[in-house]
Image (cartoon, rainbow, N blue to C red; front, side, top):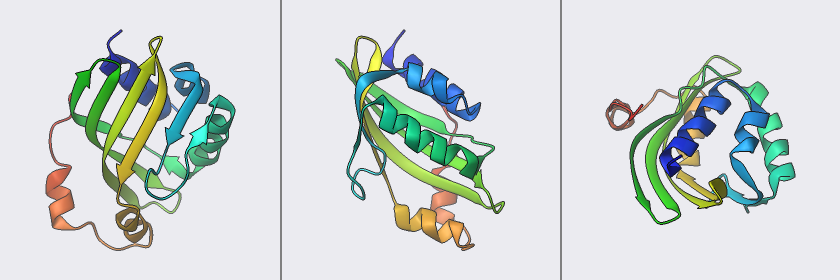
Length: 142
């Protein structure tokens, strides 16, 4: 499987809220910067499981999409939008860029960069900004 196929299969598992399916694509020694500039990384599958189990009940109708990507060696660079409906029914759209590193066809490093302020604004009920709406209106790769 190519690196992008591994990531897309992980996204498919997350859309189905299949935590074991997500973890099956991760290396035992994963280092996951789920909010790279905001919080320290999670290290290891057990910590990744704990985060996923906490997030799963908070997100509904996940439509995480990848718009573009580039692969170089064991590294995948992606641009996309993590989009879902919150527990209070608000659409949350977080454009992001990410770096995914692989070892033995599993994800061992994941760094996600996004604007938490924009996410918090949407969660509090503020409308989506027009430039964000245009940014995420692109066709995904799959």
